[in-house]
Image 1 (cartoon, helix red, strand yellow):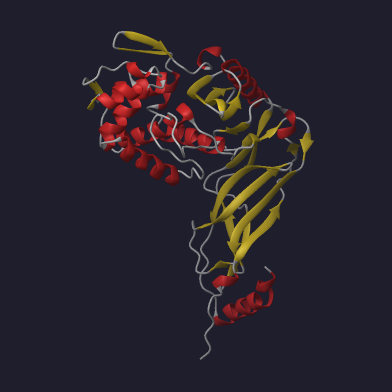
Image 2 (cartoon, helix red, strand yellow; image 1 turned 135 degrees about the horizontal axis):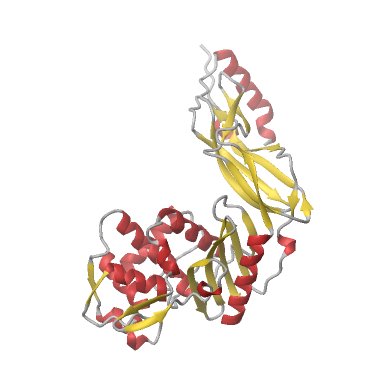
Amino acid sequence: MVTYSFARGLSAAMAVAISLGFSAGAAVAQFETKAARVYMIDAETGTTLYAKDPDAVFPPASLAKLMTMEVVFDALKSGRFSPETTFQVSEHAWRTGGAPSRTATMFAAVKSFVPLGDLIQGATVITANDACIVMAEGISGSEAGFTELMNERARQLGLAKSVFVNPTGLPADGQSVTVRDLVTLARHIWQAYPEFYPLYAQPEYKWNKINQQNRNPLIKLGIGADGLATGFAEGAGFGIVASAAGDGKRLFLAMSGMSSDKERVDESRKLIEWGMRAFRRIDIFAADETVGEARTYGGEKARVRLSAHGPVSMLVPAENRDKVIARIVYEGPVEAPIEAGQPVGKLKVWVGDMLTQETPLYAAESVGVGSLWQRTLDALEELAIGWLR
């Protein structure tokens, strides 16, 4: 008896070009900004609208508090804590992030007990350092233990380059983020925690008889901004993570490297307003529509149909038309048996030379193992052309 093994080592990244039937403009060339690092997306489709050095690392300052709040929101959603749970303000939290620290604080009294719901408002509205430390100590016993949770969650969410050292963003060696990671995190918070997200737009918060305004300067500009955080770090300049909604769109934006608070406000506002007006939505594929095919290996069929989970749409520039390129990218040939719904690859779309969107693709059908003759032919084909890859 002759047996044939599936040559896994011969599989390689494969790409199939497909036509979308339309063209669009090159987004990057239409806008210039003074910010050193920028990343902006459309929330619903995930389309990249603007990118400038999006993967460069920099110290986050208070922007790190977005990761802190993701861990806190996750703890609430899991039922481990409730907004009524009270945590005590330790002397460390009071000295490091409270009144003596002369940093952003909600002025929680040392040794007092504060409900988690109030600490959350202190952190989201006025970016209070004492609130973040108290929550970290209450949830994990220490800042260090909580920071481990932050980094664990960051990896789970796909924040590829971000590393957190404390829950406040106060200066610490090794603490770094990217604007791409921050936008990914912001969009996740909006999607996963709709019950808490509106807190970021709360105009003010009063605690310990002290009323403080929301520290996000975009909230009151009337441009649809409803979050999220600002920060300043030596060497990295002024930064912001913003969200804004209007005209049927929601945008997420992260910027860093601006020289002043005024420049941060001006540049953020200009980019948000440009993002709102300069793009139109295109529906590419309907739900369950076949996007393309992938080659199979050892299957009863030579190819398997691919589709996305749900409709596929994207935003394209309304003017300055340029070429749109779409490719199906996967590791292949895909070895049989293949189950319907099995992840296979991604649909990647470029506008001009910028990768603007990636959508996961799945097998739209099941493909069983082929006959001995079919498997023999596939094995021979792989032996003949596999080395070329």
